[in-house]
Image (cartoon, rainbow, N blue to C red; front, side, top):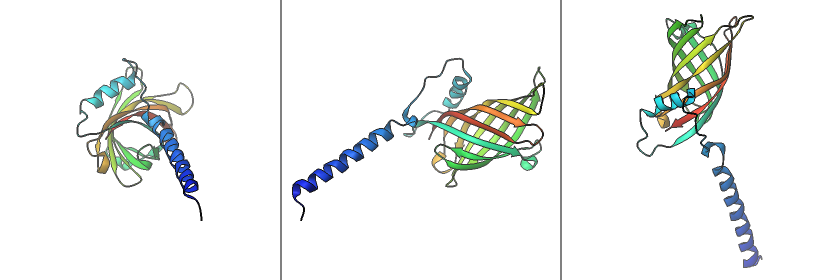
Length: 189
């Protein structure tokens, strides 16, 4: 039979381990907010997303993704893409980006607006509007893309969600239509 002192010491050790784990988790990247330069694209997207407010005890957190996409002409009259990958707060995701406008700029590149629906691992949906610039290469078939998306709502826990993404490392093969990128931003839900 164990003494009360042995049981108490084990209980204290377990509690200390639990507190340490909780402290480490509370210091994760999701609890860190980095200030944005005032004139940056991220600051502009953040100001657009902030217009809907932060009511009802919602919390703002960082959000990141790593996605790939392929052309999907069936998305609508202007086409679009199907995408898949991972996104923080959503897990493994898939979705569709429906192109709603395409216009050439003065440099011969394309400004594109997409309506996006991202489906989370549990079936909740996140809605966003993407605004990108497709920059054609001077040589080869790999184009670059810049821009981001504004989060406009969703279903389930993302009902009324707001926020933004800034796309990074975005490239597309103009022959195959395969695209990949990462993104970072904020989500309030």
